[in-house]
Image: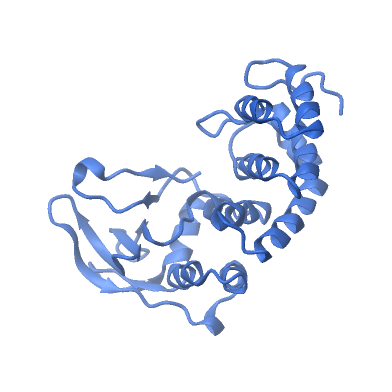
Amino acid sequence: MNWAGMYDCHGEVDRVPGLLERVEREDDAEAWQELGFRLCLEDDLLFPASFAAFPRLVRLASGSARARALAGTILRRAAGHHGCDDLLAECADAIAEFRELLDRHLRSRPAGYLASYRALLAAEQQYHWSADLADFTDDFYDVACPHCAVTVTVAIGDHGRYSSIRDWNLGDVDRRDLRPALREELSGVGRWMYETALRDGESQLADGIAHLFGRAECPRCASVFTVADEYASANGPGAVGPVSLALSRRPVGPARYHLIQSS
């Protein structure tokens, strides 16, 4: 790798190669911390050095949780506006290798399963699910009804699995039970996501995916639509702007009602 021009978050081109050499020699916590900061700033920013370092991180990932996590973070952000599409294309072989590594890792049913599962989604270029999929303990998705355009809040978690109209004072009103997809009804990425979680004993995740790829009823016009289809159309490749939003954690009053824009 020619590191000329492969600058990090500080615009430096010589610091990251040295840090990579340190973590390749030993599991140096201080070096890992600095490496993560230089390659992956907050606000989803990536740099040429992020992609230049990615193949070396993948080579370390089978035996290093830190390398696996950092490579996963870079890959999950790869759909953003970083101006490094040519470098991303050059990582194709490393991404394929990382995908196989993650799949083997998930089969071992590791602690912190969801982080590696979301990295695997990014390796499959399912960036919108990689960004917003949670563990379905307390998750909400806001989607526009395809028939009347009203914003429908879809809850999938311990507090219920329903569609509703959210009222800032009254909470979720006019709830309608979701209709989860049966196993034989799933296809495409939904089937793959479901089967992978089920294979690895993640029954709660699999059940949440069945509801996410199932159907919801609009409380306003009573039309029925597939939640995942409407969410993906607003947040997947080709979507213009964050038309819909994913909510992470159950709000308790307006002060704790916070939105996460999908990437």
